[in-house]
Length: 256
Image (cartoon, rainbow, N blue to C red):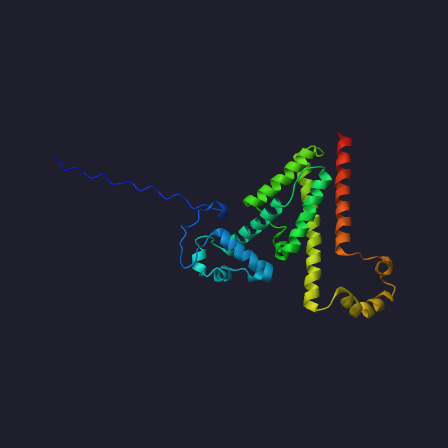
């Protein structure tokens, strides 16, 4: 009789690692030298970004703030891009927790615009991460879901394309407005001069150009424009955007 062959145990392939950081399991927690979690890493990164800007956020700096080397962080976050994704999603969590999204469509979109501007004021670095690829973290998706659902409930927009167009239009306006405000603050910080001081320093040059007569429209702006503060400019611009959306919706209804 031939000897029995031992059954060779089959080794099943390990399940593939999750592609996105929000679905990837965390390593088993170790109590020493310092306990870690993605939540703790994000809190430390958020504190760094708020205090020193995005350029200060790195796995090394975050690890140092937590008393851990950067290699320990790689079990939780693989790249700086993933860390920024987590950071952005944490801010969306703050926005989603602080608002009620129901009512007239204008009220919903005003709340969206004002909330985004308040967030950019609280987290100035957030502006730099807006306007690129869509944010797909769970908090960002929940935030978008609440916005789209509220506009759908309002009953003004006949098709989901119209809802998306309205949201994208308001977002585009807000991102442009807050980027302009941020650039003004950066320019002031770099020059060390207030807006009025900067204008006074450049006034003689501007007056010489206007005296040539080649810039009549600009001359009228300097002579007649009231130059209101950012808060007033923002609200007026938002009103124009909402009026435009309303006019478009009215035209669409007439065409049906």
